[in-house]
Image (cartoon, rainbow, N blue to C red):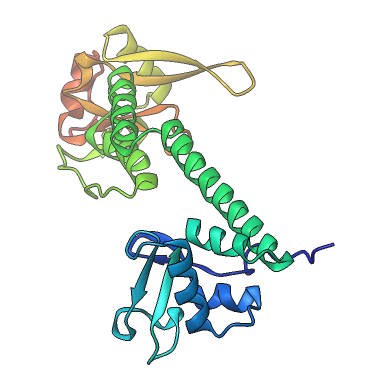
Length: 267
């Protein structure tokens, strides 16, 4: 029974001008031909009519890398088909082994090409990924009335895995604070909950419902289009599926009067 060889190292297959090729010396050594290399390769080329630059290439010393041979000898880069034929005509067990090896290598290479083609068909292109990601950002932003900073944050989440750059800031439209902070600064003795209820009644805020991971209803607040002149919706840092309304400090007094609250202190 023929010896089983490691398919990866039996006879090295290299690249030559973009094509897979075999160094004739490596094949000659493996076949254990009793002829010296120069006589063997020249006789085989003449005997079987192999064509230069089609079946093989002669590499002058200055035209090949170190992996192809020594510094002062001519090398022959054989096509895989020629290497198979040379193996077959030896009519030895080594020749059979070499030919089977080359056939197996071709199958492996062919399978890899098919896998890459199938992979490219399955995987969406970068352009498609960007388009789908931006459409998602646009849809979420419209539903939740997100501010520019939150939109940029979502865009960054889309762009980062794709290796795309994004700006690291957006222009500020004013000082943004939560209702709790601003109510405390004005000295009003009302809770953020009462403020939110009044804002919902006036159409400045809306209550949005979503399902939690456990299937339960969760509620959060979002500034409506009517309230956009008084504040912005920011993605909730504690839950990116929700918004956190923030209000412009400079316009909070005006908002309080719109909501029919009496000012205790002007900001």
